[in-house]
Length: 329
Ligand code: WQD
Image (cartoon, rainbow, N blue to C red):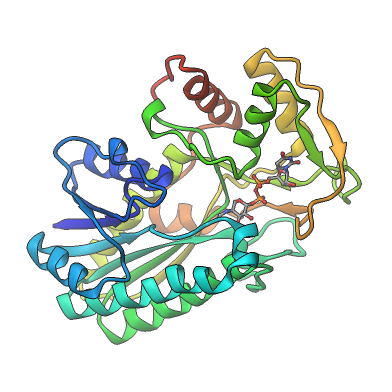
């Protein structure tokens, strides 16, 4: 069967393309190239340039490539920008998803995988976040992911699709230098940017109720995340073939908390640079701790993360400095 991967020219999407093609799946990439880069799409994988808001374009792509399953990653993902431009986020992430689901239902697509986020949980008041932890997003970005999940589940039930909503925790690292994250929105690239500029990295608050006072997150290597998509896509295809149109909602994390201070120490070790972080004010809206329970995904898909935080930082740093990246195997 052929899978359409929307956002397949982006940082995460291109890793999903890599995992799925290397495992022998046939894929087509759809990307509007607003932030994606066509150089990330491997030779031999068709790239359809356009937006998920364009129904006629989607109808043509789904029919021409005989698409049976969709992995939908195309979306806006900057939390701060979503606060400034909520309508833009709702249009791209919610209306775009609606148009894509309309086209998918009309084309008889039977498997649909949706890229969701730990941001659906907001400020969780628990050590380990399970999929049953209530959703309470704190930003328009997180709201669009909650609304997206609702839409995906309802449409799956009504239109005979097996569906999965994958809630990513903090994604880092790269499997190949040309697929690296070029945005500077998250901790690791933000620290690298400060090091490049000869400035001390910033720690946003060290007075949280955590062991060392800095925020704790669950970092996941993008290669592991991509493999989770492959496992979920295959599971959906099996379910759909058996006429089982259930929906899966799965955290993708390692189940291990790492503090900002621990990240800084690891970045110092891996890069060999003098990382002397400067503590600054808390960033508004940052929860103290967000760590996944990864039990459900391991039970459902037999998936487990293989890469540790050091390998996330090492691969990102190698790509950043132009050094060879160790293969993700
Ligand atoms: C991690 C920790 C910062 C930079 C966001 C989204 C979330 C998801 C992943 C998409 C925090 C601290 C950061 C710096 C710092 N995205 N930090 N100094 O905020 O956990 O999650 O990205 O789905 O929805 O909210 O990620 O990488 O920005 O920050 O101290 O220079 O590092 O305060 O505790 P975050 P992040």
